[in-house]
Image (tube, rainbow, N blue to C red; front, side, top):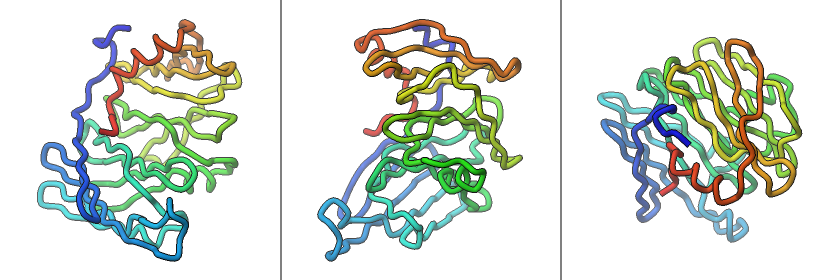
Length: 230
């Protein structure tokens, strides 16, 4: 594990208060205002009503109560290296979603819905992600409890690239871009409770296994995680 291989992205800090979830970074604040639904199940009573993004002189509000799937929490936030986009990972009743917001225009993309529009099925959760260090491109894993797939979304072209599956990944716990923006390392589970570090080359479009690792080694790699939830 060589941390100098991978890009470093400033971390945002999470705080919670009465009816609010706040993430703060340099010159940016994301505030999720929550609303209680008495008629809902206990774990779904508090939903996110709006997400307010304040960046420099810009302020954008997402009316998340109108979303098809209700959001319960914001588990991580990451700003793109260009500072033009923010990725918001939000927890729902089953799994997580990823919302990409343009910080200049306020226009947003819900990746689950965008994948489904592209014909992908079984998108229950978007588990891990990471911005490219060179462009406003984001790599992420999506799937369900039995299958994980890697995808790369280009925000400017509104298009996907789907790296080939080297094996039947059950889950993908970590995605890391190399500093040169040409390779992506990701750690996936297959078979159950066994982890492999894979590398995807964006130029050759090929995936190769790099090394197998133990559960303990896998946990150590999380020190490179750019988007902690606390």
